[in-house]
Length: 139
Image 1 (cartoon, rainbow, N blue to C red):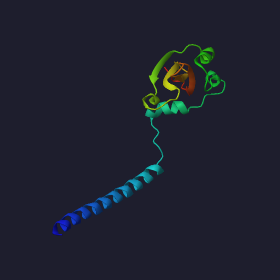
Image 2 (image 1 turned 45 degrees about the horizontal axis):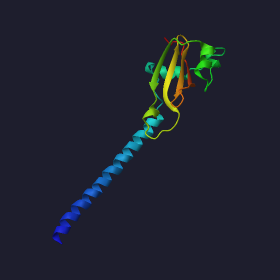
Image 3 (image 1 turned 30 degrees about the horizontal axis):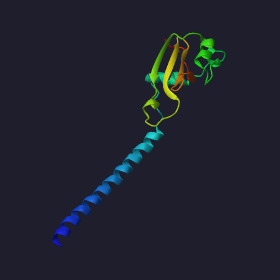
Image 4 (image 1 turned 180 degrees about the horizontal axis):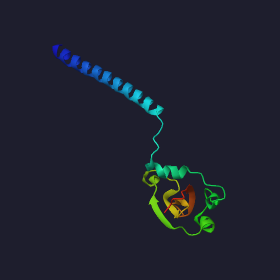
């Protein structure tokens, strides 16, 4: 009986202290997250990619003609050949049981206009527009 008491009491104390510390850390993180939500996000010069993607396309600009789900051939008819291109792997490629169509992406850059981002179908290789980014500072 003496061995039982010497084992149960310390284990119970450790469990109680662990629970108390866990609850206090959750309360402090909840209070810090609520204060973080109240502060507006910082707007600095390093957010230029985000600012460019949220810049509305001006009326009459050729990028207004490009719509989502257009093919690369349709975009080439409207805008012509791009200044440069970049192909990259989509994050969906690394999902083990992803059976969707997107395997990679390709961005077409147009100097002084912006970029068009395509999704490449991994089963048949076709490109379709998923994003139009107006950026007159595009190099």
